[in-house]
Image 1: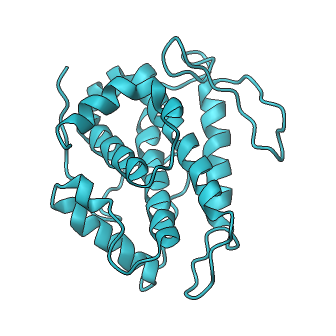
Image 2 (image 1 turned 90 degrees about the vertical axis):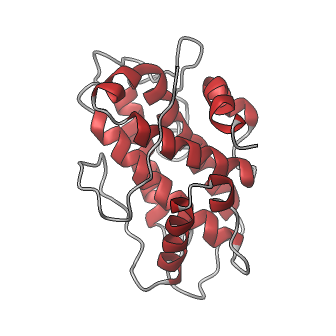
Length: 222
């Protein structure tokens, strides 16, 4: 199995449909500058370097900017395959035969519920969107501090976003190839994995559904 990669396009240069509205980082803000920096370093092709915390920057802010970016990327990638990810095709939210996810968000749905993949991903992306839009969690104004629990919220967001990648790879990779999106998917996922590895943001056991792929994608860059 060979993997191909593509350079990710610059912010706003892609006009494909997204699953949820794109989360924009305000132009001219410091976070926007950080996003631009991330894109410039990504363009160099060295992903290990690209994910590192830039000198003198705040870790929370760096994680926040990248989390928004990954939400937008996954939003776009999942948006390309929504025609294939249906109640009929995906009655369960799974990542291969061994992994199945049940949804709970701790507030509206406290007890995990079994649901179809499209419903689960809708719950998940709506929940992530609500976190990103919450100014007390993801402050966009300069000088507004991040809350003490920010990193644990970010870890939960990233852990859940990973499940969308896992579902796409396990259940919809044929469709991704058909749409000629595999290079885009692989580049996005590799960037995501390098980022969460750099700052230890997702437990290894959570990554198990794509462990082989992760080893394949990261082995060349050790």
